[in-house]
Length: 139
Ligand SMILES: [Zn+2]
Ligand SMILES: [Zn+2]
Image 1 (cartoon, rainbow, N blue to C red):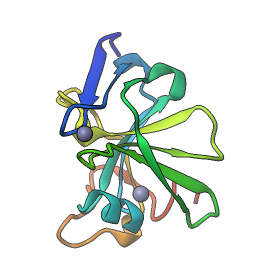
Image 2: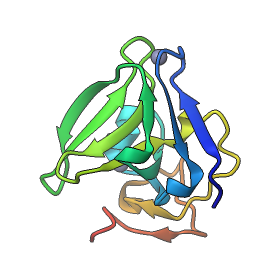
Image 3: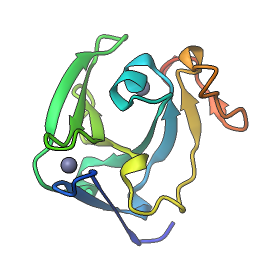
């Protein structure tokens, strides 16, 4: 992977971010019902990057929920325009999950797997060409 800087922002532009393509750990579609509700869509497409690789300009607001396994998921969004930009698991240090739809250019992105195929909606089907986890990847 290249050292190219990848950039993204919220809809209003108050919050922007960047990371190196080489820092990307993996990318996945998450079909869990919390991702459906928080994105208003069939799934969230998330890019895992180390926290130190991610540079953020602007102030995110966070909303935290307890996940099915008892961990705490905080979803960061722009207070002004409401765009979801990233999430993090409070119990997992140093990891950030960037929402792929907020990238300025996502043509380079390759998705590795599906999470929570068990709750995928028929109008937003699971990509059968990828490896699928019925719930979180640990299970
Ligand atoms: Zn915004
Ligand atoms: Zn999810």
